[in-house]
Length: 302
Image 1 (cartoon, rainbow, N blue to C red):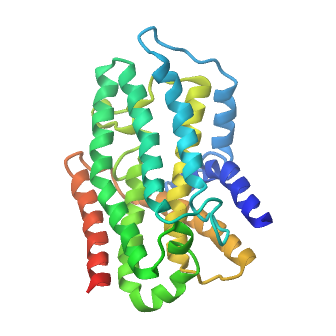
Image 2: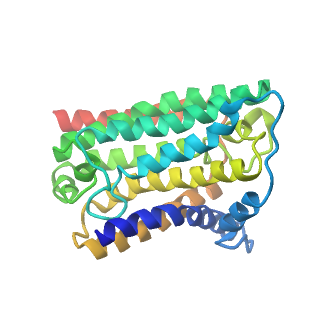
Image 3: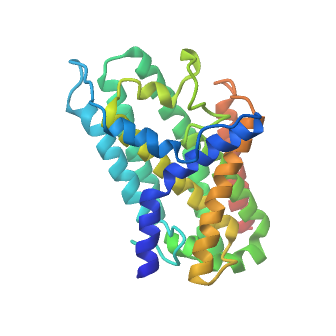
């Protein structure tokens, strides 16, 4: 019970630190000092202290978007075992609800962007839903591969101690799934090479263009929700990579936290060594991730 409460508390407060790790790694690779690790927390506090500005063309949808988006991601976090042996909420088929909750968060963000009436934000929304639709098969096929390998139907079993035995018998397939999940994490969190969260080039912006009209606490909610989403995808990758090698509850939780930091560092290294892909190349990368998950499922079904 104590560990379950602790994993939820860490889920609420740790995710912005991952963004700080990414920024720090990118700065170090570039030979710069870089921002402090706690800079994302300072940014959130600064935004919360500001007022929000709303266009007269927007409706209640625009204001509800950030709130519903964060709520959906928080609900998704209850389904994933975030370091503890079991998730806060677990039932058969909850992995499908996880995907749909993340899709709901994306959906309300797209609706808020379209509610502004701006063709510029509409362009970003169109790109967002297109690339997300291409990335979804990789996520679902990967989850189905875990179902086949572990024999479970809930995320607690799919990402639990049963992975240790699964890695012994289905190691190559699980490795393909882990690689596919990492690519999906880059795409779903608007990271290089799919998108650049720091870009200011209008013709290449995807996610960032959808939130240009948000300000103050609304923008803070969006940035906080993005950090939570990154933490969730990191949990999928880290739990799969650990493969139940730390069966003890305390050692497993500590290994999970270290894995999350390494996951953020890996993203920082990718963004430091790769350039952003052309928009026409992004679907090819996402289809490649689906192929990896598909091959994994084929290996497990043979």
